Amino acid sequence: MDCIFCNLKDKIILKETKNFVVMVGKGIISVGHVMIIPKGHYKAIGDISDNMLEEFISLKNELNEKVTKNISKPFFVEYGVFMQSVNHAHMHVVPSSNTEYENVDIIKDLFIPSVAAKNLTCKKLKNYEELLEFYREKQQYVYFEFNDEKFVIETNNLERCNVAKSLSIRKFFTTTFNIKGVDSWKSMTEEDKINDKIKVQETADILKF
Image 1 (cartoon, rainbow, N blue to C red):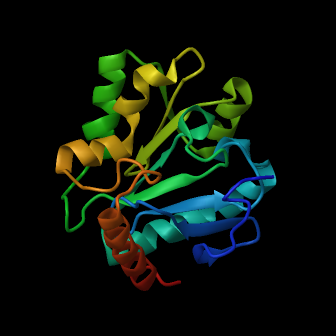
Image 2 (tube, rainbow, N blue to C red):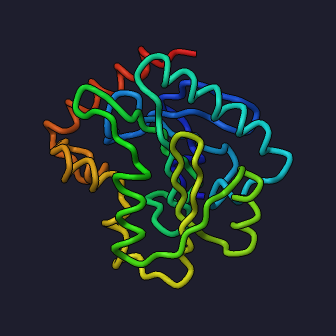
């Protein structure tokens, strides 16, 4: 299978468990922006099996503590099959404050305005068990989490082209804070790539497990 997340050779892996890795990607928004990725080829985090859930939550909580301690409290975003740039489950973990921006509340600053502007259907979740249940029923979603508040947007009846920009954390940080080189990891300039390598290395140095 031609999947860059199934082939983890030469990738920067910060933490590995039986079924998951914490990886630093390309075109990261800021120092500390990493991803939680299942080793198996799952379509979304909601697609993982029940017996993997405890392991995922433990890893996510450990990562939350490490990013909070070393940088700032992170938020979590997953686009599932609806807006993935790579067709393999991956949850973004992004610090809420950094040298290029401060005190981003992804729920108040991006999620709520986008839901209101696009009249989107969303649901607040109590736990990750409900995320798995939602996926099994709907087969797709967009997920936002910050300060232990968890939300899914129902995407079955949406056209990606109509809502993708409003829900994109990359677009948000590009337009709101003018952070260059993060709008698309596929189309970075040579200068962007140099700056990205610096941020990636800093992330690897700071978030050592």
